[in-house]
Image (cartoon, rainbow, N blue to C red; front, top):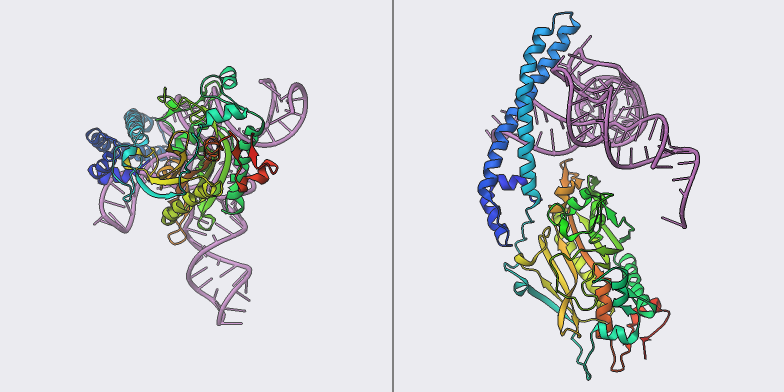
Length: 424
RNA sequence: GGAGAGGUGGCCGAGUGGUUUAAGGCGCCGGCCUGGAAAGUCGGUUCACCUGUAAAGGUGUCAAGGGUUCGAAUCCCUUCCUCUCCGCCA
């Protein structure tokens, strides 16, 4: 949620900034609602104040043994008006909340203005795409040759956009996740966290998936749970409703979890292979920071994700998403894109975002400012470090040999029982 | 899943319809006292929101949401959570 005070003070300015990311705020409707809110709320509170003082005087009169019936009749009439006023206020507040919860975050000033991914800005490229002296296969063909990547079994067990891994490929998948967890916990200072994979709607509202993006989620209706689309959701909500000590910041969490996405609206997109699945695994990084340090934290977090690719010897580039390409809650996002020889292009493998106080306001996640003694909103950040399935794809495709075998990078071998090569 | 007991402020804890302030304690902050401290003593100390330039005033908040009532922490309903026992289960 963006600051409601900003919408009151500078509605048109906020609307202009939101327009750069393709969001049209109905300023006329909002201003009208806000004006009515002001008068109805003031009136409601005045009526409540009067009811309170009159009821107290009834209490005093009764204690003094006086006849309270005339007084009661008087206040009863007040009650009707109050009830109607309260009801109207509740409706207006609900309408305002409805709008506010659907407004995306304001882009940071450093974010390039643009419409789609064509307008993203490349920040740096690390490593060179390898030149092959044979025609590189994509991960589907490599997986078929190696064995242990079975899309038919995935379809049989569940449906399209599911896969079954087995044998050395399954182990490689596990090795990647363990390697990432170990790197982030032992060298980057994250606290390993194991979280619920089913969460309630308050949690999803806190990080911004609800109420607007319910269609992207799997919903276990009879129990009221949703499957998490990313560990960002439970990790960030660890601070929901809390007032933290200032010296507890920053908090840095890492979790390895499955992620579940309905992929509504992506029919026909990335249907081949395991690039876009209903279920995939991800190692997720979350920071909770002091508001003045969140942009330093974004650089650090992005660097932590990049380090995984460096150690796995995978070429990648970092791009800053333009205003039109950013996710709902982000003020600024770096995407890390890995080179995929099978597609001859860079593909997203991590997305690192500073949400500033957008999620914190929804969650009421705060810290106590030691100078003022007042609670103040924290900033929250999240990033993949990395998407495990896509890292598996990248590793197979980048480290393949002409005979269909795949070299295991040095950093990963201890997680593979010393195996240096898959297949052949 | 069944039966029972509970949920009150940063913490402990009293409070079964009203007597302008949720008692009291602990912790924390400040004043007084002291050479300085401790002890003592006095005061302050949830959070959110509204009106207001400000000073200030007001509303809500006793797990959450409804209801009854002139008035609800207190009575009623629903939901959530915690604990104990039973059942089931990894």
